[in-house]
Image 1 (cartoon, rainbow, N blue to C red):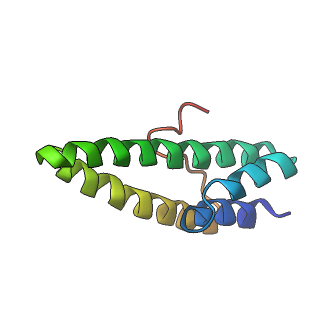
Image 2 (cartoon, rainbow, N blue to C red; image 1 turned 135 degrees about the vertical axis):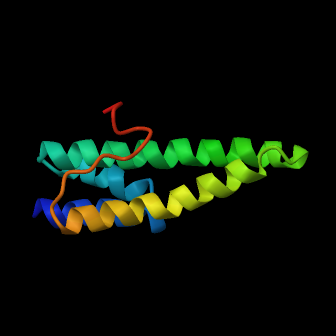
Length: 101
């Protein structure tokens, strides 16, 4: 499979099957770049959902509402940036988890 379209599918999977698609790409791909990106996408989704749950809890005290808004926007905007970067064949790492992998 071509690396460019694999990256686009991994980034776009944030909007449909955000856990299953990166795991499948990690298991089925032989390309190291695809494996690294799929782990980053999976970790990013997990971290963002944990942050959203925590900020939802704190939004009962009105402290978490700004964080909830920022994290929800990041969950949508960051994969779109990744799709655009993948389409122009530019190397890009997910924020927050990009340096972990």
